[in-house]
Image (cartoon, rainbow, N blue to C red):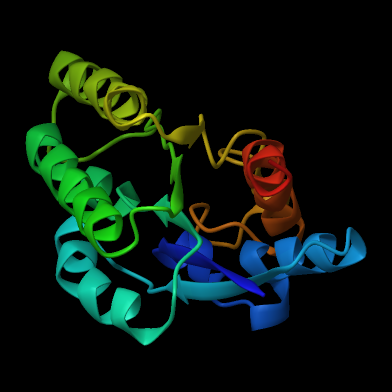
Length: 192
């Protein structure tokens, strides 16, 4: 049995939902139905930034062998307006740690976008930030030859019926779409 580590924030953790509704658990059901030899492990922590993930990743990598590492961090950096350069450096450091400890592990990077208001950043600065933020995932994927889920929240962001009352976190129906978005890239990785 090979391990898939889902390393992320509240989107991976399934914020305010039962563990069974989080997209890593939904993907495990799909993996099982296809009789693929993988075990999905959910290491999502609500509120986690890339800096927090950078500090935490070593302890996660020490717990069990890693065959596939799905990296989903950055949303909380974006919400806080953390400089894109900093977010990029933290994600690169996490990728480097995974590659150092498990050189054979396949890494899937999960992209995010920010079309919504970031508060402290004004008008065109906000638009520039959102543009740079979106681009950082593609740049990291290309630089490191990683498989990329272009936009985790595709089809969910901004749709009230697919999110909790906070309008930010997917509900159970939204998590099913997240699972589809991730599977579109992860499925072919697992079947290679």
